[in-house]
Length: 308
Image (cartoon, rainbow, N blue to C red; front, top):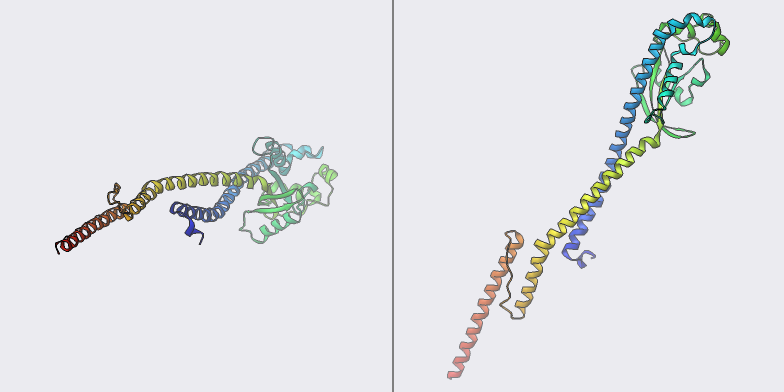
């Protein structure tokens, strides 16, 4: 009922707007998911690169630094010989660089020497997942923390270096200086090849979603501007090539209905509107001829009555 009271251009505009709103809603939902996934992939790629860097630091510490300083462990405990310590220190320095301030790194271990590396309940679940499925080499997703939601990516930590057993095998083999600093209750009993923890890199979820939101707003803004321009151009075209000719034909038809058979309008197109105009011109011509014949007939009838 509402559409019946609208002009043709208004109906067409309303239809385009309805299509735009429905299309925007559907594409917006799909676009949001794509952008969210893309943002997660970007963060994951950066996190994986950081993990590979930390693994290189761990390997270098274990194979190059530790052998050089192992003799000094009987005199004093040197944390620089511990791969996890070196990796954490390098990462903390890396976090001072632009683009990495919001990243956090932890080597979560079930039975660590240093209590700061103790896995929490969530991280323990990740480690158990890696243990149950040895083919699983990566887990990522979102988790809730006291400071807010974070996006994380985790990989298993396995005992691959024989040298690590000196400090994590049995207490009697560990350096006395390490025992003096950390005690002999934690960080022992590790087995070569076993999964003892998980590398976890996390970033605030807002940082991940913010990129997606900014991209979403920008893309949807471009789409809105493009569609508004399209509606304007379509309405301009509709007014020029459809509405104006139809209005002209309506004016001529109104004039013809009052007896003005001289009213004319120009046909300039070959489309449906042009064919309609040509048909109207033929109808007007036929009507004019019919009116002329009728007038001659009346005049003939009048002459016959005069002769009588």
